[in-house]
Length: 117
Image (cartoon, rainbow, N blue to C red; front, side, top):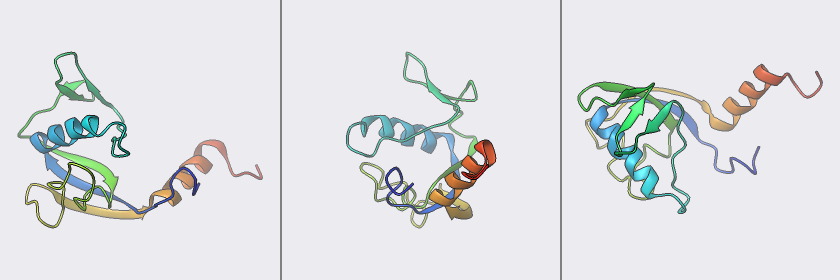
């Protein structure tokens, strides 16, 4: 687990407007190859560059709940200084959860059983 997630950190849930989500996803693509590429689930981008969540275009004014890492919302990732839960009033920390490595271990156990199973 340490090899694939060496830094750990807590999973957090944040709320942000679609305009901020769009900017964040676009910067994530720009970060490809630098270690700052964002992983997504249920998110696509069409040929015109528009982002979709759950098959629907992102609404710039709609609030979205996003699960991410505490590091990502610290504003320290490349090109994402604006993604700071302490200084950006458009980004609201909704909940803090367990360490991402613990969450992955628990999900793997849920899906595949423990190594002794």
